[in-house]
Image (tube, rainbow, N blue to C red):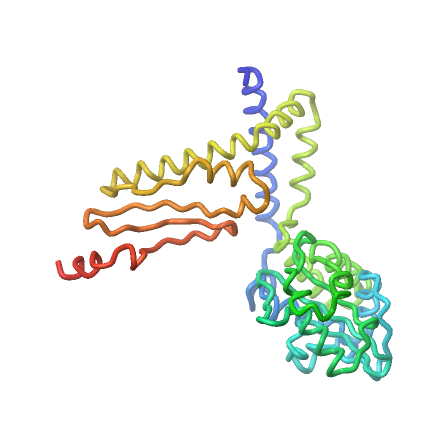
Length: 348
């Protein structure tokens, strides 16, 4: 890069830093209390999210809006689900928090023969069995045990973002329901659920307790989906677009982002190795450059390759530190690799 380009990038980063500082001040002045996170983990899909959504959908809930929120929910989904209030089953319900046949959220009218399955996945993975997938299992039980026609069952797979699909095993492990792969619709907290909550906030404007409950839940969703400060992003866009210099600098940063990422990872690891050596350890196995290349430049599967390196102490006990594709850091000792060494260490 030429010197003038580097100076422009430095100036751009300073301006973006100022935008970030202003956003931090704005966030510090906002109300931070949230009743949901005060009671439960923000990403508790069972005890928080599934129960809250199903409770607000339940016409028997004491929010006194009957099935207004349910109708809005179905409208946002584009659902064809029909029901009679006297025959409608919502599980978990406002009075019974248990799931129906392990289904996260279920709407069913047995008399009309209609049902909706919502599988809520925030962090958990699909719980497939050896001979049957998770969504297959729910689908089968409604067909075989509740006698709901397959054509009247809607299946929704709910994630924070609409970028993750159910595993193939979840929908086709047994192979009994080939139509299921086309029936499963992807929905997200970021899109459909946020839109539904926003509509419910407007509808409940004259009912403060209900309105504020939905408002707090919307803030929780935005935090969970990293949408908590859209204004900061808009300010950054405005900052970049104000002049040709900053626009060109932003493009230069974008074009070189992967290379910057590569050198950042490599430099961090070199510093880590040096610090371990300074503390009397011996690095025995470093992260290969090929691994860094795969993480930065590879496809989706290659980017999931874990980073691992090993080192040993003066007693030749070998340790390993690693990080997986979910940014989980782990470390430990391999008993098999250190057989006899740990025992002798305890005896000294």
